[in-house]
Image (cartoon, rainbow, N blue to C red; front, side, top):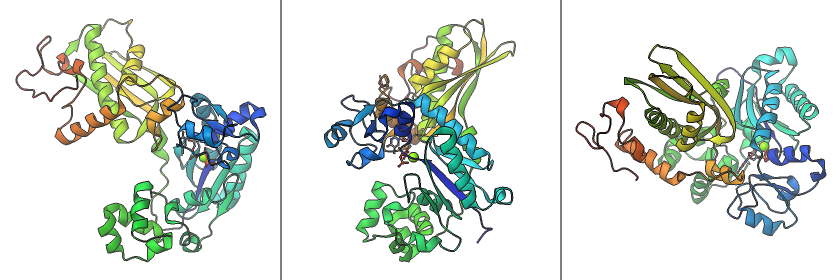
Length: 414
Ligand code: TTP
Ligand code: MG
């Protein structure tokens, strides 16, 4: 056993719905349902009043309407949730620099080093919960434990507005009787597999021989078995938020015209969006970097209100940000995406778009995913948008038809 750590997981209650109620107090006590009223949209979240009627995150809005006809349907206002999220995260950072945001409304805090200053972890959780309520008007639930996954489970234990503290030595007693579906990391598919193995509680899983679980579930089985036995060595990782995903390219021949620039930005956008999808992230900030032949570098960024994850979005923004008032020629271009947030299943970026009532993506997410998959298996850049089939910066001569010698082209999508 390593040195004891104290971890707090905090998660705002019915986050989007609570923010809407905060901004319009007339909604208080009503079944507020967030998610477009558009036919194919899904519920992002809903107030606890709506939950009492059976409405759930991820449910088609139509079904929610059927279960709860008097529900107040509201669109997603992502920028507002981001604003509040930043204020809440800033409160967390008063107590420790070790803050790992998992989503807009939840984070892990490692407060081991803060105890001397602020008192025990439980007291810190009490302080934070009070400050969030007083400074934002929202309630937040907290879980305190020596283990990361237990802190996460504990924060959901007495929702809404709950605090659950699992003392040192109490970990297994708390964990074992819980339903197997509560184990962090068990998705719907794994849950089904575990139940088909006859398991009902986390203790049932813990009691199986490790080798057997691993044989049935592979590497994930090993991980879950450890969690079920109260072993979770993962640290709180504060670097997560500052992370960015980017790509830049120095060209063999400097780029001259706007068409070349647009095409290269598209190539970069394709690569950045593939990596976003690979890591299941969406971005809110896009930065463009351009260096001219005299080595003058310009970078411009913008933070937007709608989550970005597709190459068409990245490309559009990159073109807007590009310093087109300058002459070039350009020797280097780059695009990077930051303010990254997890695009959680099952709502995923596509549903987030619909729920927000935003312009439908012009590029089929299934096609993007298929493209990523083929590129992963057969080598990067096998499949790409048709405009990229000729690319002056990367060796193929200008105006040369695709498929020239030296560069085997895969079947293009168009
Ligand atoms: P959650 O913390 O999972 O849910 P919640 O804050 O609404 O409710 P509670 O924590 O009290 O159970 O997610 C945070 C926000 O993320 C949520 O308010 C809306 C968004 N979200 C979706 O858009 N779709 C989803 O399927 C889920 C689960 C969340
Ligand atoms: Mg929440």
